[in-house]
Image (cartoon, rainbow, N blue to C red; front, top):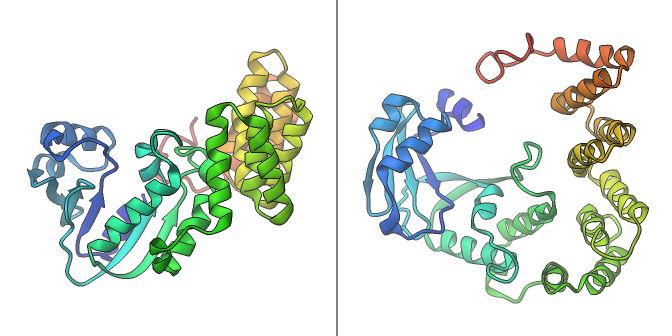
Length: 308
């Protein structure tokens, strides 16, 4: 949506998208890619049918400007200033776990390859794709990693900081069923960096696998939410579990916690309102619905929301 708006505003003369595909260049298919672009409404029918494929690069136009979708192994030949945007969902498509594809190795490999293209980057941005729940919250700590590597790319050529090495170990240990060891390491890290919300969330995740009782895990989650409200999206995953286990009041409670932490997110308010109505608490739901009706819903992306 953001790129669509930027293109319509005339901000860019071309778009290059490095695709998160683990397959070889030889496996690319213009027919499959065309179908994917149409199904996701990324390209119009006319734009999709104009696509060509050469040397691992799909080429066409998008909103009237040249568009190139590039295989990660292909070289990007750019001249002139460029704006780089990195979306965390790129890594989620390539990540196969800490044993097969350690996340820090994946980050370093990706950014080194990008640096080798010698693109004249004038600005860089980063998105998590976690508010729309495309990427797991457990990877949120990578935002800080990218920020530091963007600011100091020379770090790519030296040993990782101790904190990153510890984080890598904490990610690896659960793969070996060493949950207690991972929790001890995370507790040490959290003591040293108490304001790091991602460490409290990691403690929540690993505590669910140890002998720690449920309240301990939820306390770690609350600590994470207190420092970064995005972690309250975890409550959206807990609500249906509570509902399925026959605890509707607990589902309402965690949805309320999510709404309190993110009062400006209409989709959380909507989820809470629906559960309140289902529970017969319509008086509590009405103000939420009234606020939702008062919003200026996009006619392009959410045309049916007011009637819904």
